[in-house]
Amino acid sequence: MQRDTGMGYQAWRQQWRLMRAMELLLLGHRVAHVAQDTGFSAESPFIAFFRSMTGTTPAAFQRHAKGDGGD
Image 1 (cartoon, one colour):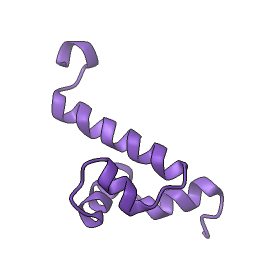
Image 2 (cartoon, rainbow, N blue to C red; image 1 turned 180 degrees about the vertical axis):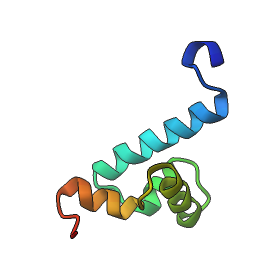
Image 3 (cartoon, rainbow, N blue to C red; image 1 turned 30 degrees about the vertical axis):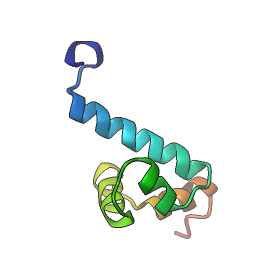
Image 4 (cartoon, rainbow, N blue to C red; image 1 turned 90 degrees about the vertical axis):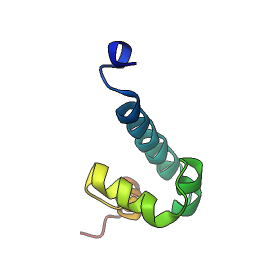
């Protein structure tokens, strides 16, 4: 894994989860569905993960992507 991707399995998995989450959020899926689809036990840990990786919440990411960020 390290040789092929330049990252270990855990880092690769985190990147995959983030990219999948962004894809689903951009398609308009609810946060609860995205959390479940990406393997989180509940919304709260997913939101914490997403915020730690992107600096924003999934809901804010969706609003910004739709062009109605409100700021």
